[in-house]
Picture 1: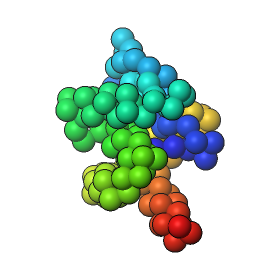
Picture 2 (picture 1 turned 120 degrees about the vertical axis):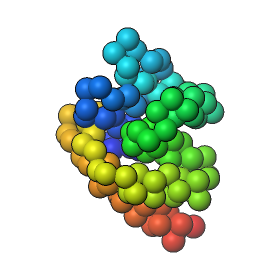
Picture 3 (picture 1 turned 90 degrees about the horizontal axis):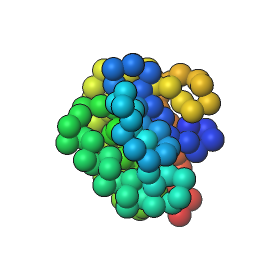
Length: 121
């Protein structure tokens, strides 16, 4: 999932896996999304999918994978992940700007944006 400046989000909870722009799984469990800055969405997708095999219910991973799906034209897969986020309890997520948003707010925002994009096609 992306914030207002089109940057990935990460979990606010310190013990959680954090999805951010960059490239590796850090020593404190933070996940850095490889393909975001360089546009390599295939690599980003592979890494997030691998991370989701370990942590399938982490909303930050679902949101970022949904963002990759949406950016690669797989709208139905993205919607399914946003719905999965909404089906779970809301989690506070840190945005790269330093702001905090709920996983539900971000999923709903993404769904609204996706609906607007479909309407303008």
